[in-house]
Image (tube, rainbow, N blue to C red; front, side, top):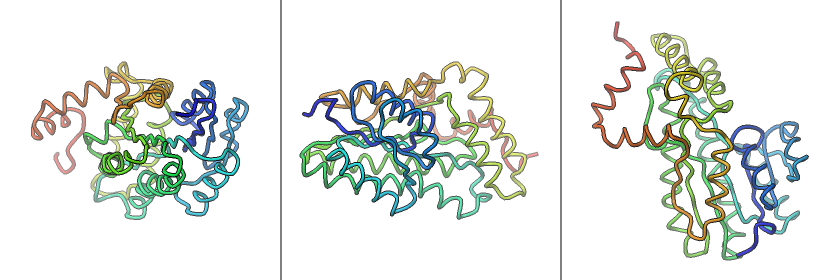
Amino acid sequence: MTTDAKRVALVTGAGSGIGLATAKRLAQAGFTVAATGRKLHELEPLREAGCDTLTLDVTDEASLTAAVEAVEQRHGGIDVLINNAGYSQSGAIEAVPLERVRAQFETNVFGLVRLTQLVLPGMRARGSGHIVNLSSMGGKLTFPGGGYYHASKYAVEAISDALRFEVRGFGVHVTLIEPGLIHSRFAQAAVSALQEGAVPGPYDAFHSAVATATKESYEKGPLSKLAGTPDDVARTIEKALRAKNPRPRYTVSASATLLLTQKKLLTDRAWDRFLRGSFPSPGVA
């Protein structure tokens, strides 16, 4: 296996949060890091930290192809792919316009798949590689008003499980990272996407409650005390990359452990009753 100093890691969504922390941590650990994002100016701190920085829009085929070709030409190949780019489109299933649903899957699923397809030929040719897909505890459970985001993460879980089997014989590892609540800009972005993307109508009160619950779960209340940080996720990713036999899944933060355990222990009806304690039911006075 190549040493960390020779391993080239491509990180998507590196402009903030988990992607930023991961790119910085891997650079400090000796990896050659290609940090990517849609806005080059957001990547400036990573360039100063020693990362190679490139613009990359995971929803654009030309951008994906150009980024992979550039990294391969500059560094000789891609040993590690960290599919981190993603966001949450909140809103009731009926109320979110289909174009917003498509945009959610273009970023969270199709971009991840296409980038994986682009880097795998090189990994197979070298007989080694590691693909790390950022899922979520939301790939194992579902909160009201988050159906489309959760569906995208369920898809990432299924794709990763199939991929792990398919590429193992070529020497390529596939790892899922499942964070719980993480103190970052994620909650703010999720609330903004809800406010901008949902059509006004009978779900307005429900959407307002979802926005409040989302914001407060990260800022106050019992779950906020169990939240992790982007550095916690970055540390877990580095651990997976250093492992001789990395696990298929790594859960990050006490909030993820608690809620995933609770979901396992409850029936579907009991889980629904639990959720009704935090979210109003649309249509019920």
